[in-house]
Every structure is written in structure tokens, then in C-alpha cells.
Length: 217
Image (tube, rainbow, N blue to C red; front, side, top):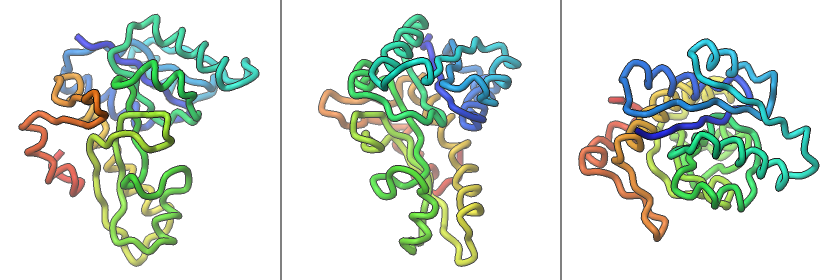
């Protein structure tokens, strides 16, 4: 049974989607903790209501990223995590932290990586005039938004789209995609090879057509 820790900074809507899927589908896993760098993160109240232990490790209590990440790592490791999930955790993580969780640390990014890394991805997509946009779940590496891709969900960019409308449509697919990928990992249907490549079980690979169109989840 895999131990899962989720990191948030705010509302944690992707965390909520994962918790709901976990409860509904009865995964063979433990949601050990939801941890935030902000005491006022709204997602903490949701986690507490669901009976999940919560912790706050405030970045304001540390003088630099390295010391903060060391403290955060010490708290996470108390739960012996098999998987650490970034769900709107708004911190750039140090190389040492990321490498400590190699193959166990995943993130969801609101673009079809490798395009539109960083912030304001929906504005970037509109400015670029692309026809499709979406979200990517990937393993985290020291390269910002550069880790191996596990799966992506695609949405069309409509002529009348604003940044907000496009963001809403992408977020809807994030809430479908992220729980599905987490379940794949819990069921050991996703592997990260020593060469840094993602290997999917046959039944997962066969479902990617549906994932990639943002449907069938």
C-alpha cells in the first residue's frame, strides 16, 4: 500500500479532485498528509474535513530556499512517502530536494509541455495563436517544468476564448487527468526508467487516445 503526501499553497483544487477519486474508487493507498507552505491555504480546511492530517511548513520561517526545502523534506519523510504530489505548490524546489524524490515526485502543469513553461500559460497560448492547449502530468526534475511527461489532456482554443475561459476549460481537464495518473502510479502502471523515460502498462498506453483528447476518463 503506497503512502501519498500532497503539497499545496492555496485552494488545492487538484488535491480535492485526487481525494474525491481516492475515496470513490477505494485506491490501495494511504493519503498520509496534506502539507502547505501557507497557513491560510484554503485547501487545508478541505483536507481536515476529509480526515487527512495537515501540516504547515512556512517558507517565511527560513532565510533561503535550501534551508526551507531541508525542513520541508524532513516533515515529508516522516510519512515514508512512495509518492509526493505537487498540487498548486507555488515554490521553486531546489535540486537537492527534487533529486531526493526522484521517481516519486509529480506535478501537473497547465500547458502541453514542453511548450509554455513557467507562469501565465493561458496568456502565452493565446498570444501564440495555438489551436490546442491543455495540461501535462510529469515527473519533476531539477529543470523547471522539464521532467518526463506521463500523460496530457488537450482542449481546443476557441476564437472567443479569454484567458479566464481557457483556464477554466483546462482546469476541468486537470481535475480528470491528475487523479487518473495518480491511480496509475498507485497500481504500478507507470514506471520511470533509470534513463529517465516513462514506461506505461499496456492497458494504460491503450487508453491514451482518450486521455489526450480530454475525454473518456
